[in-house]
Length: 167
Image 1 (spheres, rainbow, N blue to C red):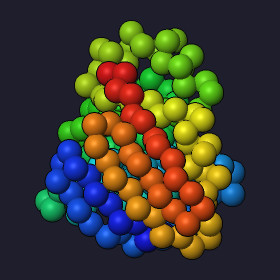
Image 2: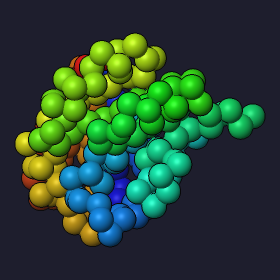
Image 3: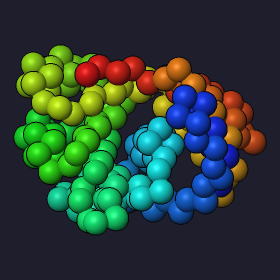
């Protein structure tokens, strides 16, 4: 997957050549949320992890050059204990929730999650579905990020993915 990334808010302009491995039980929607999380946080040391294949690792993480865990990113609706553990291990923790149960997950766990230093972001399910419908085996994507929205263009069409900061 080749991504022309323009993050106007952070002044990041890069061409990313990503090879994304999709776990057999992973949906296209979840895979594309991982890609969007990568783009929203693109930095030199940020990498995809084993994710669903290894429950001890997040979906993405970033270590400093001296090996300290700087950033832990989970996709979905993780258990509160997992977020708490990640918050202790990493300098910064971000959760990207996105599916039809994301709002319910947030309301049930809101008090516990707000007591932590983790950032919780929600992506709109219908927008993620529209993005997943544009996925091809090899694709060139243009992503422009500004004001908590990503504008995505592919040969299959265009869509917008909005980011709502819950905490």
